[in-house]
Image 1 (cartoon, rainbow over the protein chains, first blue to last red):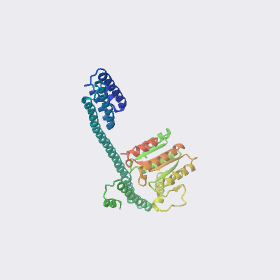
Image 2 (image 1 turned 180 degrees about the horizontal axis):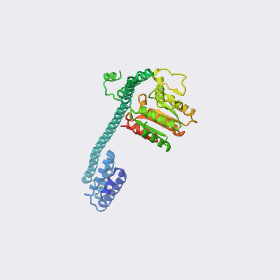
Image 3 (image 1 turned 60 degrees about the vertical axis):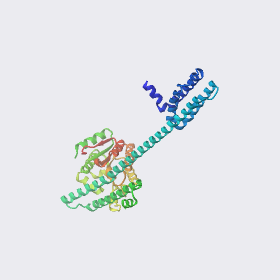
Image 4 (image 1 turned 135 degrees about the horizontal axis):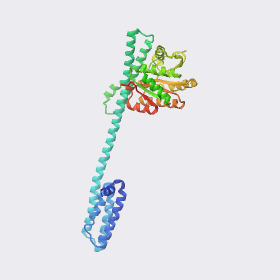
Length: 209
Length: 189
């Protein structure tokens, strides 16, 4: 039973559910109202259709409420031969209830959409932050370790064997590497300043200096 | 010598696993480079060493000290010209690249040297992927390694890529592992 109800209330199957309910309401209107002449109670079933339509289709469900209301009034007119207040009030209630549910549902969906969008933005920013931190580690921490290890090795070699023939080129290489690391730092700073408009101008200028 | 490394490497090559990423500790990288070059030389390969870490002169001395026949070696040196600002001339079996970040020239040089030694069982030793991070973003390095790995795979040539294990982020290792046949990390702590 639960699975049955779940299937019908699933938004994926909303068109099928609504068509089925519309047909059922038409059937009730024709048999109970027009055929048996009972004009009370059965109209409560209409609210199931109207509330679901309002939840799924928001303001557009009001047109369905108007159609059902007009149909209800027309059948009453056909039976009684004159316009009476009860069917008019019922039709107005159809429209009013549908409109209220439609507005609340539209607002709820809008908030939900905003919430999903904001969650996506937070996740995207988080990913950017992780990528930035990782790239910082890749292009700053590890290169500094390389330069440090190379200089440490050179230091050991000088201590043990004296200055090697290629001392100059090895030192030149480390100087170049440190220049490149400073360039990397500048590049990463530039990236963070470009992506974060909320950083004040003075700090932007300072970070990129 | 690291017997685990040599055993794993020869085992990989005998199983047709030609593309290998060797992750080392930073203090073991130099010795692993020597061990790998020695092993490949003993297996009869002509070794093309692509260096972005140490100038070829430094590597050559290390190899000579370790008893490796340097006539079986060719170098693509992307660091000497970058460090001293000029390109040394008249040095045989060495191709100089202006900067490790110049991947176009590096790619052309690799293709040229592979063609030159195509009859001598060439193999490539790349020292090192992690040092490239000084010069290029990790994504660019991954793409370049992918390009080289594909090139080597097409001509059925071994390629050993050295890197400091701690220096690569997990995503980059994961990317690189998709291009490689094996990852050796015998001593990474």
